[in-house]
Image 1: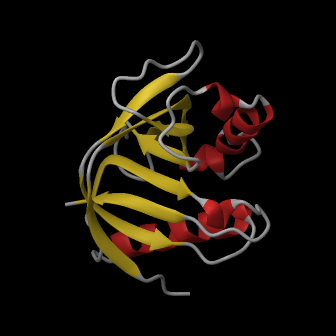
Image 2: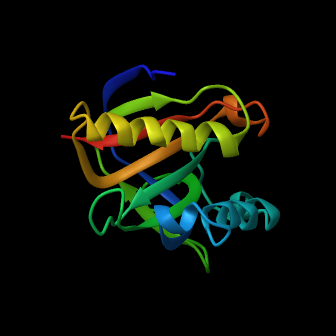
Length: 161
């Protein structure tokens, strides 16, 4: 299905969580780490250990791109925090830069289906020249619409020029 895309200007904010390096080729196999990072974050109750959260939303952050969507990147899962918070032991702090982002809202359904489908749409729009990504920082917003992992909806924010 064709995604509707809106462009927004957002202020910067800070996320604290766990991160790892990966690429989309690895994520398409059983060796993918994104699912494992999410599992670890949830199973170990990491959100509860993050101080001074600014809300209950969770974020999946993609940054430190080696090139484009074919290269390596850093994946982080975490929660938004107040400015000046220090990351607890074993976690990292990442600043999400202010700027222009294209927002793609996924279909409603199971995470493993709707999120990759939305990213494929983003890659397609990019290949068609309809989306000019910065490859600085992108993120997925998990709010109250994402509480049921089998019937979830997520907003994907992609940094654009």
